[in-house]
Every structure is written in structure tokens, then in C-alpha cells.
Image (cartoon, rainbow over all chains, first blue to last red):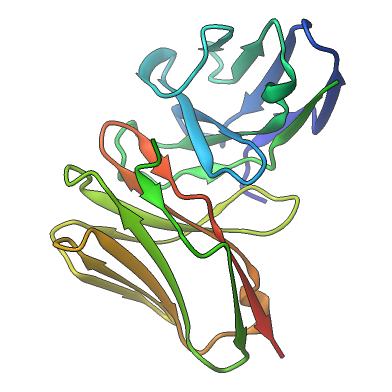
Length: 114
Length: 109
């Protein structure tokens, strides 16, 4: 158990809908990262927050947004969902903001868009 | 554009032998490299890392080698154990993290 929790574990929804994925980092970790893993793809970095502030953006679509709240949990919002958005979404947390801090991954949320 | 590539989707090795997992990258600005291990239904877990100022880092049965001129990274597992069976991702960092597509390692008892 990494100490990072993600809810829900599974989510099935329809095209055009909007969903929110939630991540609670390990106690004491200030950074939260979001990743998408599509079928046969590696993890694609989406976005990084540190202590409530956005630090880096990767290949995140404009239909997706995220935020980190004062209690450090984070939410990833996916809207106008398309079939291609079906994927595993992981969040990870780390103590610091730099790339040398070990990231601890949650178990992921499997999103299925029908 | 895949900046980190793992060209072998799968690898099978006998227990006790060496497992060698390979990774290539394209961006010479990457300065830190990592390997993660992933079991089914779990998130990836950090295994070992190496800075670009080194060419080798060892941790128990796991050794990572970095060849900057070839932009090539490899993970050696010696001896391989059945519990090592998992998907292994390499990753590189610049301004963000870039992950490969993973290599599924099966260690045969």
C-alpha cells in the first residue's frame, strides 16, 4: 500500500458526460501528479500540482482540468468524454516538487466510456 | 512523439538467470532516469534511479546502466526470481516525466 488513495476504482459512463476523479496523497506529501495510461500505451503525464499551485502541464486535453485543494487532495475533471478517454488514470504524490523526489502511485481509476 | 521507448513488449527468463530490460530515449536534456515496476491492479512502484552524471547504479539484485552517448538505459536483474514477474516502465525527467510503454517480464520457475 503506497498510502495514496484514489476513488472511484472503476467508473463507467457515456460519451459526452463529465466525471471527477479524486486523489488523496500520502500524509506529508505536497505534490500530486496525474497520469493517463491508455491501452498499450505508457503512462502519459497530464499535470503536476505542488501545494495547491500548478507546476507543470503535460499532454492534458483542454476538456480535462485539475485542481489541488487546501487539504492537498486533488481532483481531475474530465468533460465531454469521448471513447478514446477510456483509460487508467493514476495519481502519484511526492514530498517535494522536483523530479528527483520519489513518486508514490495510487492504484488507479479505470474509466470506461461507452 | 514518444521520447522514451521500450521496444520489447515482453521478456521471458528462467529463474536464477539475468533479466535485461532496455530503454531508449531521444532527448539529450533528460537528466534523471527511473525504473518502475507494476503488478496487475496496482499502481507503479519505484524501483531504482540514476542521475545523468553516473553510468551505473546498483541496489541489491537490480542494476541500472546509462549510456548517454547512445541514449540508452538498461535494467539488469540478477538473479531473476518469480516475484519479479511484472511490467517494468522506464521513465526520464526533464521539465516533466516521460514514461516508456513498459516491458512485461515473466520469470519462469
